[in-house]
Length: 449
Image 1: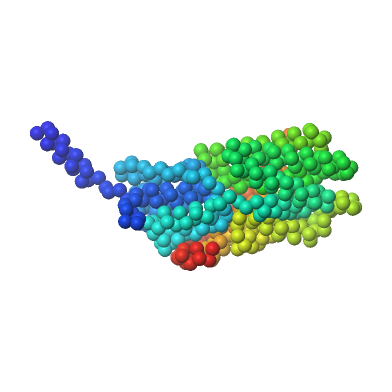
Image 2: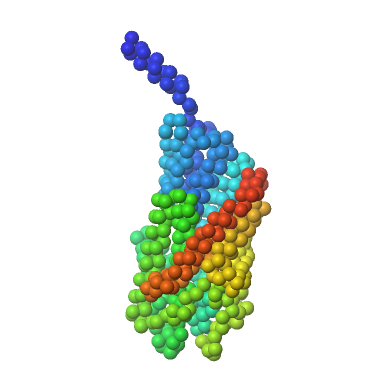
């Protein structure tokens, strides 16, 4: 009788236990947690913060009618989805393979389709496979040319003399070659920022010593390695910390600071080797140097102010080549960077660089979110990224750390906080609009991409 009673109790528990959430995919039953985890892993590889990934998965879950019976947890390298009633958990690891900007855009369109209900959860595996199928190593020529354009563009925007602009173009291409070769070896990826900064500083120091140019601006050294500055990474870390994602935010922040430390060590080593001394007065934000000239002539003269606007376009095109954005997203990058440059350079004399950076971040984030609502082919997560190189004072903070100047370090830290607050405000304002408004079907947007 005892055995019969136990059997009846087990049967009663089994009958009372809620069924797990599943979807039918290609004739097979797949747990809903596995589908959401697969989507989350894709978003992590696309560079989204854990805060954004968790929010996207919860919205996709709610749109499918599952509701809070599935709990979502996200870490930098994995996604956990658990059944609240039973505690059964599904864990999906991110692949750790960096996606291009175009792939990130397609991933965002998939999320928008799931949120609107135009895409079902059962479609996630096939669409994720299609997005990941486009993962290929970056071609050599666009990578190198993109690095050169980005380097020269930043040198012009930050008012470097002509000799430094031409040198930045060549050194940027060389750094692009070095990084392209070393990126093939996983063990060498972490040391690329140090080697790039060391090579850039050494070449600039040798050229300055050989030509007699005694005024070496900050961005003559930093522009060729600006692509390695983890401004977006550190900003994501601050956003995660403000959203109470302490573990992930702190880990990203430490990773970004380590990268800055490697770059600072490279600059210090190159300076010690060649005797280079960077002009500390040239450590300024973009709004503070807009239109600044010099009384020097010849190769030490700075380009005309109108050339800076052309350089902003070249900078955006260079980033598009480096991150394989495609022509459509590159055009959006041009518009975003020109707008960022106009807002920051126009408001800095009135509000100061710290406030102007936060205001520009809020304005641009709202604009890109609204653009995303109108044209889902252009996701805000991708279109807002190019403004980071202008808004994030990563390179200024880098040299401030390299020169151990506590006073100079205060400005980039304050600007980081301003940028974080501005981005958070910009992210909240579009909530006044209906984010759950229907979107065009992803089939059409994928065809457009």
